[in-house]
Image 1 (tube, rainbow, N blue to C red):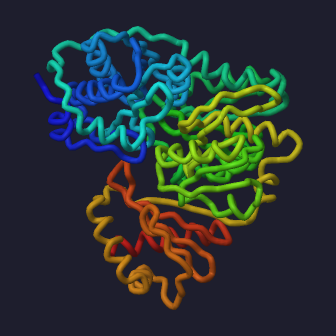
Image 2: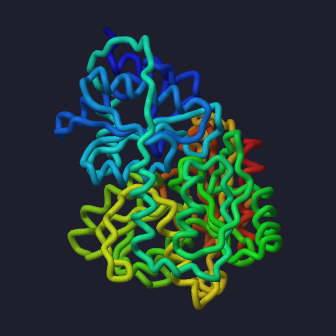
Image 3: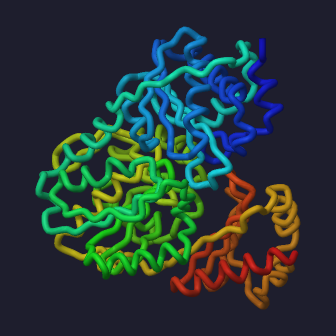
Length: 472
């Protein structure tokens, strides 16, 4: 018999900001089984259930990992519902309605040689406490020798689309030309029919048979140029895409300019008349300065931290939500849209913010809606293959001597206004520019975020900081 905690520890896999992540070579069938056994036995201490749902993204490694998870579920005498390739929020939503736990096999936006597992309680995402319980679980299981065949159930896909099409008139998008950048997104088979069901004329492009690691928080220059070209070539009003597992949106306006995720979230929350927000510390400060919300709480980066604030906020406010700089929108309470109730979905979702933006841009162009906000611009990028240990050493030394650190980055004779250590090192300068460093929780990357008075200057801050930090 194998012990879950021992197998997990030997694998070297840890939880990041969203799920357990690691190299594909680390996710052996027994490691996947160990995580699944640990998760389910932890859930059985709190909930009664006879079924567990599983879904995957389009990564080459995801199918076998799902089979290993399914075998572990069946070893425990439980039934597996397999939804195949669907967006993570689609799996989470249908599982919450069924009051059962679920497992999503996905590495989100990280490269295809890596993968991951996301776990959901019957009432939503697991907490940081749940993560520790999974890592330390002493449950025993038999080594995996055979992998089961899995039959796809399409109910998650159907219910996810209905969740949104039921909110709007089927002519809501009549006259709109919408482009769908499909690449390898887990939701690529759902988005065109969904937008068409609301009256839009849809053009789909760039479907890929190979996994494409789209990072909605660090959009490549190539994708920026593609969007501008597509917008002109197809005369588009809007472009929609997501990351690999369909929980982070990537949307472009009438000019083919990609919107920052936190600006999209701000506009969505405002359109839904959300009273209170929980957002990570890396989000744009326009959220507060626009004065459109009763309360804003800042958290560490990662959906579990955002979700952890919802209970307290719900005690004082009628409607609660959160979003992240990567665009994922989390609905923390049942809310009305067009006098229809949309149920809470406290996990990142890509579709809701896109549809709400389209709903409010029927009379006013998207770029004009963005221009009504306080003009603060953010930019982010990362150094890939940069060991987390190295990042921690550099930032640890920086905290002890911030002036010297900024000087080594090329920022001399600049006064520091404030420092925020909520998550990483976030420095606000006297001119209100912000530079924020943080090791990624999902991959060996060092991320840098900046905020300034112009998009070009925010980008320049990030490029300068990342170029110089590699020399330290």
